[in-house]
Image (cartoon, rainbow, N blue to C red; front, side, top):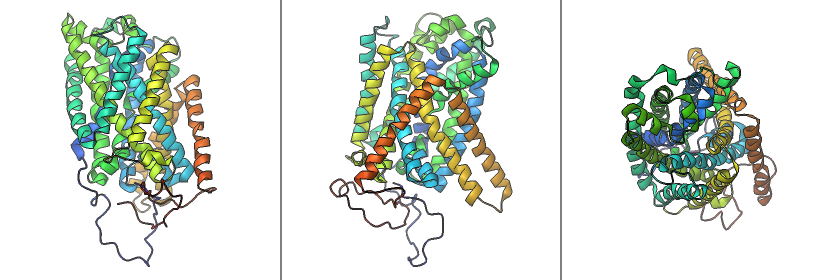
Length: 485
């Protein structure tokens, strides 16, 4: 995985490297641009987009303005992740970017926060997924059965990931195609059936326009969480310097098209009052367009497939992120253990946490989906902030000083991503920020425990992790100064 990047020239005493660049030397069995793009789309387009219109309905059509602004911010983040992936290779995404710029503790906080985002986000995805399963079964929404359905939705993706990367790659491509086609249909043909009276008041929440847009944007951002997944799994991508950035941008653009137009279709085909109460808004929209129930049930099937695809992708990520940090000795060593290349402990433990959070949410929160969404957004925005900051920091200190046009452009993009992240955090609400901050700071005792266990204080040299030796011996091999292969 990653060691600390050294941007100076290599030590003159070392022989000239003869091996190809790290991305060329990657082992076989990795996936390429199509699967990397499918991973982004599959992780981004989960059931979130299928449940989002209902969560945005209390704000009215003004939330579409928020969606457009969020899309601009998401694209700025996508370009930022693409640039960072070329400069800082290896799996880990926001974690390795923050650690490269801000050191061990910055890297740990990002890994911890993103890990929370991944399993808390899985809980939110599965809650929305349950809403579409209940189109066919448990239509009365009995909580006990809803929890049972949710457990099935969490553990099937875990089993697929535990069976190996090849199974994940095939499943990710298939589910991405199956989910994208019906969404694209709703985002194109569905526009012809819009009726203006369904939109209701432009600002239905009764607050100021700025407050409504900010609050709606925080919810809308959840639909874009996952644009960084190709960078998180970069170690499994062939030629990552080329493919990770392209997959991130292409996946984000594709998702943006179906998101905005699809949400517009739902707003224009289902009344605002009905939309606020709906647990399956795209199903209701399809029924309104075509009449009867067959169309809505077809969309419900697409939402179920979409949710499984997203959960499969996020279950991969929920193991990859802590594994990358554990290989750098900044996460408990057990997360680095693998079986057939799969981080078993990370996947199983994270799925257990998502299961507990889901069960608690169903029994304690009135607005289960919205509550989980905002918690996930807060913990996701922190790594986004650090990533945008890391890129801006590098550009201003070691950027292409002689090519000022590129420097101004790249600083502008990173600046937009940074401001957008702060704005999203501000719109999440006090409760979500409180819970998110509390969860983030729970990582401090873990960091202290890791450092005390190795007898370290402050920054330390970080070496590649040997999962077969380090779990039985505290000794650390000398730092070679070489980038990971």
